[in-house]
Image (cartoon, one colour):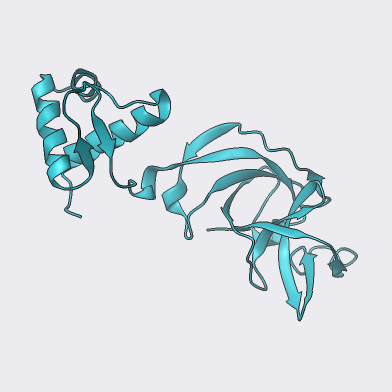
Amino acid sequence: MQTLTTRQQQVLELIRSWLQQHGAPPTRVEIAQALGFRSATAAEDHLRALARKGYLELSRGRNRNIRLLHSLPQTDAEVPLIGQVAAGSPLLAVENIECHIGCAGLFQPRADYLLRVRGDSMINAGIDDGDLLAVHKTPQAQDGDIVVARLGDEVTVKTLQRTGQDIRLLPPIGLRPDRDRPRAYSLAIEGVAVK
């Protein structure tokens, strides 16, 4: 793909945002008004340049004739904050989207959602009560990963320990001697914490 100018990137981001909010692309007049162009012709020029570069397609005969061909870079993609996760005893897992935060591209691998941490069992891993935890949705995790795990109808955040086929969830070593002992669970990995 060809490189975009700053203005072309702004037009592309506006189209993506408009599609998410309204379910249809903006008109040339709406693009011009939103980005401060002097006329709809300036918006049309940018749209044609984006079409030549392969980012969108313009259909004939329709006012809202813009179709995005590729996903935008994930630097500004929004991630839903979907509730809370226990760092301690598991909490009832209720997915409730509180808001969206534009931060997906800040994480590697990409964050799919955020959870608000409740509890203090992960403080030695730098995860405090009230922190937002970025999670990459995956059922796969490696030994030592910080995971969001489902235990029946509840979810918790812990460090994953694998010993052969045995999987255990542990708080960080050194938190509390009585809680550091591994406990076996029947669990499903919901995702891995990302940085």
